Length: 280
Image (cartoon, rainbow, N blue to C red; front, side):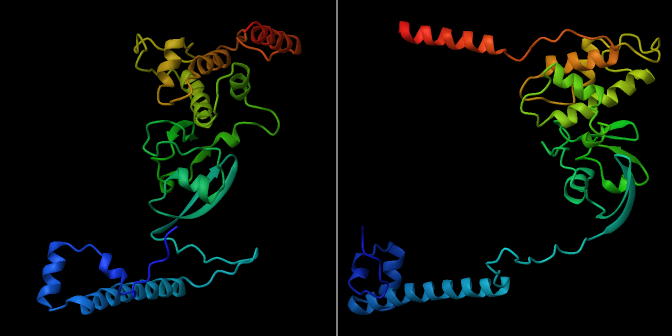
């Protein structure tokens, strides 16, 4: 391991490699031999001193933070362009003072601590932030909080009634309609709002005859897939999502395509693996 470099060591400066421009500048200044080495050493030392003073000044401006578990940190800066918004969220009336530019997603997560709604792309493309506003699904990352004045907002936290899951939540579990779960809150809110769209007879891109449509539509798998196309699942749980929505929308029980492995099945798999290892 090399010894620490001392910028004032005149012998060390002999090893410095200077560019042609630096050599020419020093020659024009008439700095040669020991004079040149002393100049270079003091220049580096001065630069280090200035850097140290800047660090000290920055530390002083920030103030010393107590190394205590009860340390008190500065409050967040005051809200700019503040507006007061009163809205009903999951059945409770909330009054918020927010920046007029704050989107609903940030208000839910940062101001109301309703973190079930997820921030995915933050550009309105993935659907992870979907919530229900006045019965219609919206992308909360593109919806200004100020535009929700007086409206009713339902997030994934508001779907269940106490310990009783919403039928869509129960169907998602039954049909294994999620894997990592990150997109699931948006998928659930979108699916619940989709049921109301079907009741109202709203058409989609794949509706064959928009003039003959009626209320209480029975959705095909193609219809469900089209209506849920704004919600992306990178895990690829789409078959389970479609099956869950189809069961809830139709009211008919659909066969479950998976089950938890029994102890006998686990033992059989372990025995097969043991036999394979022994054969090898």
